[in-house]
Image 1 (cartoon, rainbow, N blue to C red):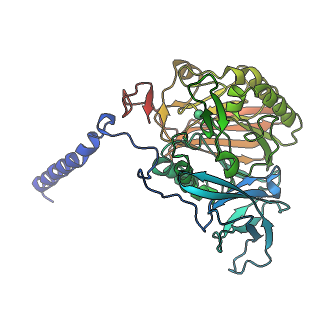
Image 2 (image 1 turned 90 degrees about the vertical axis):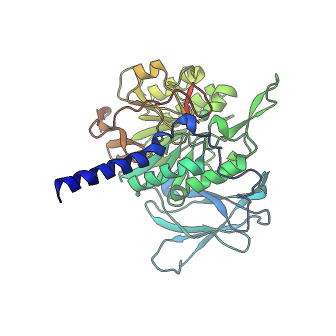
Image 3 (image 1 turned 60 degrees about the vertical axis):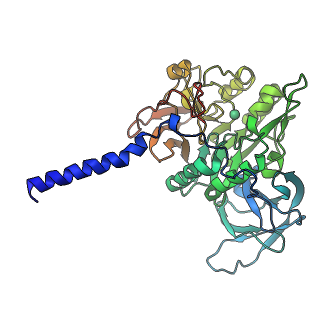
Length: 463
Ligand SMILES: [Fe+2]
């Protein structure tokens, strides 16, 4: 090619680039209208329950190697339906099938009447692939394949997600798909609360979108959710009698182990999977409903009697809040000393819509306290969080992959596009644990690039 022709082609390329780049450059927050919380147009019924089962989700039993519980939804014509479970095989013939009957409860929402069902699949073998399906009205769900947790001393991969909460269909679904690409062998997904925003008359649409978004995860592994403040509703709002009450969806949507703290049974539980004891707390009940001490006592008992090598706690509201003007003092007063005394390895949290990680006050490697966010809503970091936490992030949707293998727990936080944001290893040597930071390959700190959200709020970064 002649130099002149090469120059001409380069000029065309620059011109085309400028044309393509112009609309992208113009896409600043000021030019962008705020997105509604769901993609369902006003006045449209998209998530009505039907004869076909939907919102199917499995949660681990207390001993996750021995089974899981299943919850799902149908139209109101279905009562006490069956679950079928068999050893998964390569033939379309499922072979001998065990049938378990579900318990049913009704719920009427903006999408009309529905029945929610729960069934317990226990007595299973560890590290075994099962096929199962749930019944609708004259129909069945597709067969799902799910592997029970491995016995101790086997490696295990799991996922952790901070708040999904907003625009689940529009912007959370990509995070779930990216997480699956990075950890196709995951057995368990932890959700740190505020799965939906709720309280807006569109709660059921939001739950419908949450299940659509997490479909690739929920179809292949068990799900362990924490309850966030948005899983509660306000009753008698703006009156002296104002109080938090549990949202109608939570107790019907998940079939949790039911071994929780007195007075906070609906949102607290523990289970063992492979070499880990997982303990889930209800921060809202602790902070607003007076159960902080009861949960701390219960946590103390669960951790005192822990034969597993690792301990992971999950609670929606953080012990150390990375957002400006937030301080969950009751949790720090009652729950934090128990986490520290038992040297919990990881405390996985949400609520503040930023990312931040830190150790405790004692400068010990554990617990590592993490706050993360998977969804669209993004807040701003406090100056203190910028001093006390590392790494930190604003304006970033994230997911986490945890790989546990014997004495090694490897943690990775990745962005919605799969880039590495944070990584470390906890290495056990006898009774001691070493924290090994992995800084190689991490992308630089991300800070909010805009002055205000599309709605003009300067205290947030995106909504
Ligand atoms: Fe929250």
